[in-house]
Image (tube, rainbow, N blue to C red; front, side, top):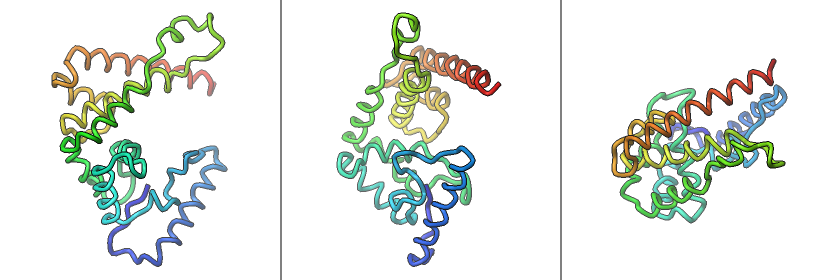
Length: 201
């Protein structure tokens, strides 16, 4: 995504988006494909001025169902600057008030619990035809819970284990549960990395 300075000429934005599309094309040629759902900087949804991002963030908080507000919120609270202003993006500052919007928090919690770890598939892969996707079946549930737990305590940290530590001991995430989730996340990440290195070799 891109956040334009509010002083950027609106007439120049289409040219920027065309350039972002060209960059995506070059990366795809190199084997780094863009998001299949269109969550890229060439899309008007993901390239706005700071003022437009703030307005959109407030709209999503006010009505998380309309315009996929809960999904957009989840995407943007995970965002981190990679070029330009290294500070907290304008839209992220809006989400610092997230705890004051119980409707959005409830939808984020539902999303967090929608993906459940498939332990049976993990432990008994030979008995089933399906494969075990470490990211989808193991890591994603932990990532989602960590995001929601951190938001519930007002933390703006981004790494999953940091989010779990920030929420540990709160009413939403007991310390022992946080410790377990951190251990599970670390073990699965190492397992995934080992497998990817084996594939590369």
